[in-house]
Image (cartoon, rainbow, N blue to C red; front, top):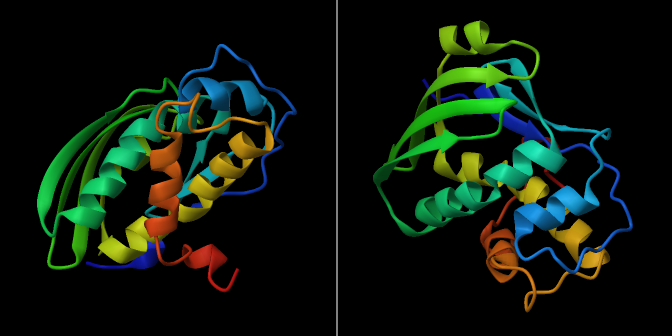
Length: 181
């Protein structure tokens, strides 16, 4: 069952602090510096269930896995991968299989903001076109990249910042909510 509306991401407009910590050496640490705790979260729509994602803690902890997954989907025609998302407020395991232009995710949810685990586990599968799935991450990557660059973080000082830029530029389309922007 392929339905793009079963999975999409609303990136929103989080506030970005004017901060720069010279001790930050990776994207995750820099994101924790620039995004305040109390700002707009991204919202992942999973089978019509709204799952909030904090930029400061959820997305920052997820970023390396997001980049790895996007890299696989953009370079490998078919495959499978397991991801254990570790943030306390987005603790889930995804078994991901892709091929023939489609991606299928079977998830198990342990801890999610709003105590949505039961509802999410009862609706734990999504399937959509790979291109649609990839496009949903573009606006998230843009917000992170712009926030880091606006605060003076550079490729020479932040591990994977160059990779983040490359991944952003490789995604040809915006997600469903951002088409035409």
